[in-house]
Image (cartoon, rainbow, N blue to C red; front, top):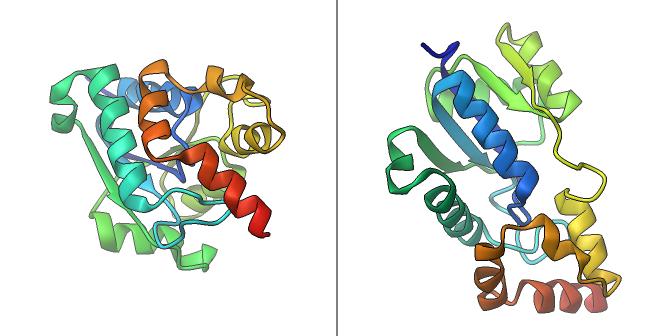
Length: 177
């Protein structure tokens, strides 16, 4: 029996990477059901959020199918959520959008605190090579011209990112800056 019925895992997934995959697998060890929240769904084509919510949704579906098999949808939902920029009511906002859940799995101290303050479980995920495999670091490496970022993304996702022109888009956004 799992410890929780339903947990949420928020992220921006810019792009999805091995740290996200590790956290999702960890969360599924704890819960019967996981809601993966695509945060900042309203933002795209910016340096911080180069991919659209729809692109991130497709990339996450690819990841989940590869990592969990096609029946992942029995246990995992992926929901894009726009930012409200009001931390104090964010958890209640999520409840309104998603229904009831037991808590969160996150590596973000603010997110963990907001869930604790709301009286919900706040499970800190084990971090996977955080210094190299974070979305921010991946985007920095790309802009520095390094190809080492690709080691933080599952190999089957690289053709999808190439199809979306992720690297070119990011470099173009940086040159417009």
